Figure 1 (cartoon, protein in one colour):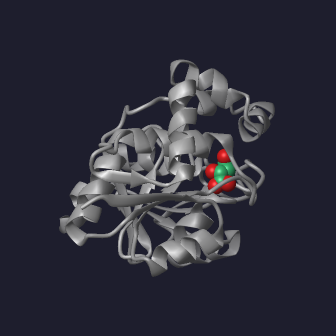
Figure 2 (figure 1 turned 60 degrees about the vertical axis):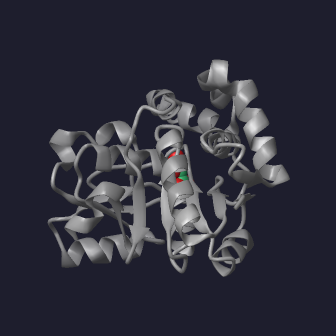
Figure 3 (figure 1 turned 90 degrees about the horizontal axis):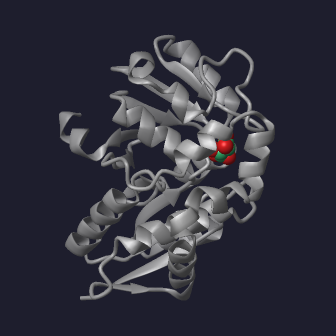
Length: 247
Ligand code: MLT
């Protein structure tokens, strides 16, 4: 059976993907999903996404052992332990810890997908690994795959489009039937691949991050297939796929 793969950008696309019972891969290359992948790769126990700063603060107040992390306008909100810079989520800082994370677009797209049975977190860092994991589940469950671009403040984001293409590159052509948007992303990724950092640096959000002093974050998030960590969002929390059986 050929597995249909779609690429969506809006809340309506997420709702349709949930209705189709698709496996969802939420993509936010800069920086939410790259931060989640890095935190879990560095042995954080879990990442709990919230829609709002207030929800994150309330959760932290009830559970002060949580690391309170996130951003608004790219910047760490007042009183937070960490911002949204993946480089700050080192194993020394996050090993064995639970993190509550609220970001402008990424954590919202993740939470908006909560009614889907299978929600993976994808970025360039884990493109190949998340492609394999989502394809395995879609094959077992006989469903499609929806790649969901979180975008930036509701706008199309170049880095998520290229990230979707990088993930689609990991789908074997004989098994997966790509929509035109997925094919477009795949072509964009193949064109950008040789100079991916330079291409992504030209995007709007990367330029904004640079102006805020986060140039190193952009470079880090542009690394392709350096992580095998595949985060899965289930029951309001995100854990690495291999650890799920540990509860
Ligand atoms: C987001 O979720 O909107 C982004 O991760 C923003 C950022 O780069 O901090």
